[in-house]
Amino acid sequence: MLRRSLVVLTLTLIAVSASVLASEPPGAALLEDATSYAAQAGVSVDEGVRRLRLQQEIGDLDAALAADESETYAGLWIDDKNGYRVVARFTDPAAEARLRARVAGGRLAGLMETRSARWSLAELRQLRNEVRGHAKRGKIRTNSDINVFENRAEIYVLDDESKLHAAMAKSGARVPDGVVVRRVPRLAEPAAALNGGATLSTCTAGFTVQAPNEELGILTAGHCDNYQYAQGVLLPFRIGKKGGELDVQWHSVCDLFQVSNQFESGLGLRSVVGTRPRIAQATGSFVCKWGKATRRTCGWITSREYDPEGLFDFNPMDGTFMRVNGRGANLVDSGDSGGPWFVEGVAYGITSGTTPANLVGVILGDEDAVYMAINYVSGIGVSVLTSDPGPCNFPPLANFTGGVGKTGSTASFNASTSSDPDGSIVRYEWDFDDGTTGVSITPSMTHVYPSGTNAYWVMLTVTDNEGKRASTSREVCVPTILCISPLP
Image (cartoon, rainbow, N blue to C red; front, side, top):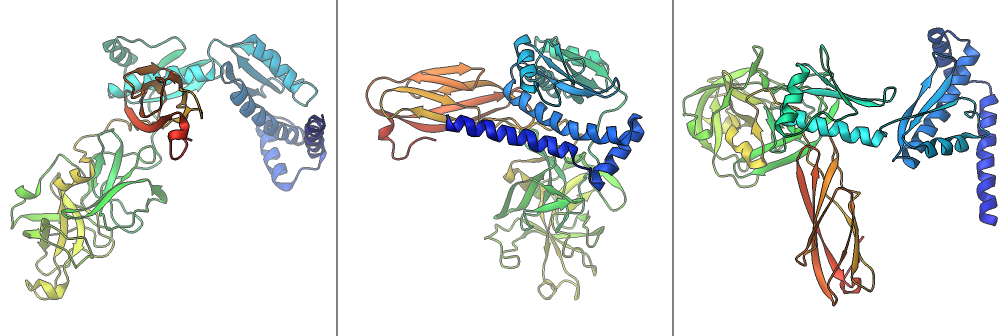
């Protein structure tokens, strides 16, 4: 009883605080914003202050409904063109009644209007992701949105809408009810482009690359700092290696920049049309590079057997690096590392550094450049783009918790911590390591193990709406007391 009284008292204090806040004189910042609102909405400044204060409470209500009514909630919006009201939609009339009870006696009670909906927000997101998956597999660029006013998902395409319909038909699918495909004059693009040769915080970007999961990225040298910024944006580090024949790392650029297969040549952007492996880069060949410090410089390959061990504090190398002499010109300097080497539109490699002048002995006073041949990027699992890429596609992340109790053999698992950064999980496959498996479209699963005591390795494989898969496994002990450490 005491606990209930404390809860009631706390809620009362919050309500009183909100009431006091609403009656307090507006601060200078709120007055400035309310003045802008009043001018554009055609109301008084006092009314602007009232509405801006209300919209904070409406935003909190929106978040609460999304969490508490996720299975039926279809979204809300503020309608300030017809007076001032809040319209909320639900697929279940009972949820509408719960909303009215939630706001009863509060400042929003007289402002709420409820409407029925066919689709919840969760359902619309799932339908949208299903269509987006087909579009990506068909290499059709799209934008998408969820229209809460019309209770539908919308897919925007540049091409004729029939192309998307045809792509789905090939898979035996069709655009589902609740989704509208619309042709638009242009699609949204990232604010800026990032090409090969771009300036990074401490180095130079090499060529643009793509991982097997279709994630797009940019190369630079492996000895560069893993924290690289481009145009003030931190590029997510993926993998880098420095040793043997490798001096390379790559960073993701998905959803951060507009990217293509182009690179800076110093004479304008060029498109990569192919790559040339080390074995096919003949000694005496003329090659050029771009770097943020020395910009465009060119020279002649003098060796393809160079080993920079000791000069760059690398791990032991195998003597596979390319060495280039500029015949009197210094070809690279600090900051050029990672930059592209090329001839025409063919990628040859990325800059590693220079040899010290006192060790060259070719032409007194100059330094040779050193670069890693481009074929070795396969060592970090990427390939150089030789055509314009399709949209990024991130793989899902598989994760689950659970196990059996201290006694017994019934296990409960929950894979709700699995996720997909650009879509949704649509399938959960379980291997219980006792000769049985299970499949579900929801993250929860139970399984009864054979009687007795044993340890099992449970494997979960998740599939996202674009067909990408990921797996993880965890030990389960029957009963739990067998395990050295309990499952989370």
